[in-house]
Structure formats: structure tokens, C-alpha cells
Amino acid sequence: MISKSRGVFVVGLVALLLGGALGKAPAATAGSQFDGNWSVLIVTDSGTCDRAYRYALHIANGRITYPDQSIAISGRVSARGYVRVSVTAGGQYARGSGRLSGESGAGNWTGHSPTSECSGHWEAERRG
Image (cartoon, rainbow, N blue to C red; front, top):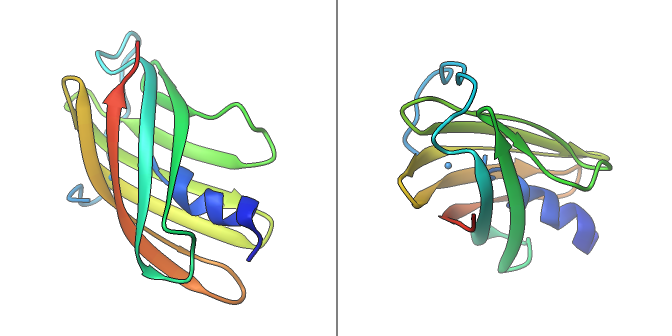
């Protein structure tokens, strides 16, 4: 995998978008308490992806966004802070789940490409 595609796993989720949330997270309401800028550290615990990445993500009305539009992110944060996110770029796919609480959060992620699989954990902190 190329480095940029490995970064897809990191954004997954968040990323943000992440362990412990089972099932589909409820849709967030406008003006979510988690709205704002977040710094997300994605760490690979298993597989051949790079060891770690840090990304700046944004949450608006509970929806997770990333400025690089070559990476498709679909993710939400529920009113209770549960996160579910999926990330796609090229032939790579990653998904994650977890929880935000106040100014921080944590969870797990998994991802795969045509040639490898990776998994790990993520940590997030609010940046404004």
C-alpha cells in the first residue's frame, strides 16, 4: 500500500470516526456538543500499515468531515458520543467505532486493501 492509502486507515475513523459502539449509532442532532475541530491519533497495532498518523478532523452537527475530498468519509457522532465511521479511498476501506466524552475519545479501527489488512486503536482530543 502507498502511504496515502495507509492514511485512510488512520482517518477511519475516526477514524475519528472508535471501539465499543455496537450497532448503528443514532443520528446526531443539530448543534452537537461534539462539534468542532479534533486531533485524532491513529495507531496500528496489527498489520503492515505505518505505525501511526495524526489527522485533523472536523465535526459539524454530528457529522465527521475531512478536508481531503479524495478520501470518502461517512461518519457520525451520536448525542451520547458514540462514533461510527467508514473511510474509502481507491481500493482501501476502513471502519471504526468508539466514543467521545467531553474533550477526548478513543476506540478501535480495522481496514483492508487488496494486498493487506490492518487494525489498531485511535485517540482523539478536542482542538477547538
